[in-house]
Length: 419
Image 1 (cartoon, rainbow, N blue to C red):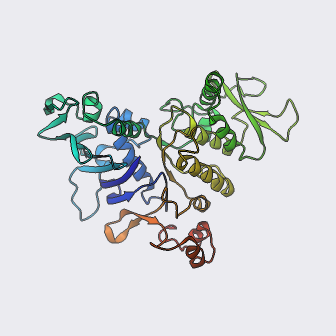
Image 2: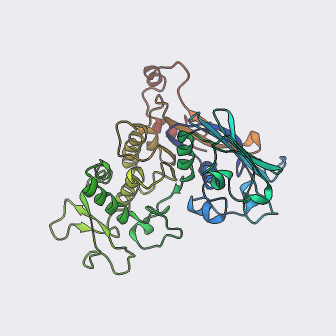
Image 3: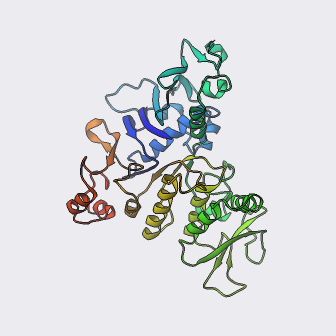
């Protein structure tokens, strides 16, 4: 997973360093730069994947802007036409990426990059050329004429680089990162996903097929616990008895709704037999959202590292807190939750109750308050919310008069959280 991230000159982030955990929640006012952080990771992922072209960026949920709009342009600060992202991966590897983004280019391009493993270079690249250390110990020189400007050397030379399996797995996981922002209309089948991905689209498509895949897997290979996790999520809606997958039923599914071969039906425990089966079009948007998040956590083909923008979307405060609790437990308890695919998540929220499910004394849980610092040209700052060093849990409770984090947020006692 990503342990440390240093971002320079990317959108509203002029210079920021973050020490990350498994569950990372970003709060703050609108426009503070929360989504910019998610997108910085998306650019890093695209470079390690198929490249920095618009298609790869869109598939990761990165907003498609003109290249120059990706760089900071603060008053009084020089715009050098590049931005940099420096990522430390579990202490085993470090990948540094510099991206050229200006009016001279129609797409983002790799300006320079370097991958280190245990302090030793694996490959290096700048405008003069590149060096790749191969598995046999040989060093290959690569000229600018031989590389693709939008693609990382990891993408083009991964088969020959000398790299530990652990580092290779981490880079592959990061290359699959995506920012999810489910939309009710897409999950219901009323709207069509612009960039459909499998198994789940960034805006909510693919739910029925993903559930069917999990059911088939359990039937063929035995229970994995994934379906139990799904039930735990959608039953947070107290009216849901169960959920089943079946073909589109014209007596339940409206004719104008886009469906595939399968449809998820929710069984309402309060309604009579024969009228208690609801399609995604009729089910509550919150229930659809809970099911979507559960699939992100357990489906074997979803990214092990992902972001969920506006985790409180469509949910009431109580459900936000309960969902965050289940999500944090699933991601952090890697030994106790073998069905969980997710290894690290990045979340944004405007709902104070999202804080109440996280434990500031658990180092896997990280809460960052994001704000624009008027004293630093208006650049985005990240302040990690945590108890003072040496303070016990009991001392924290006493110092805050037993108040929950959500109360502290609402009362304005968390600096910059209210904007």
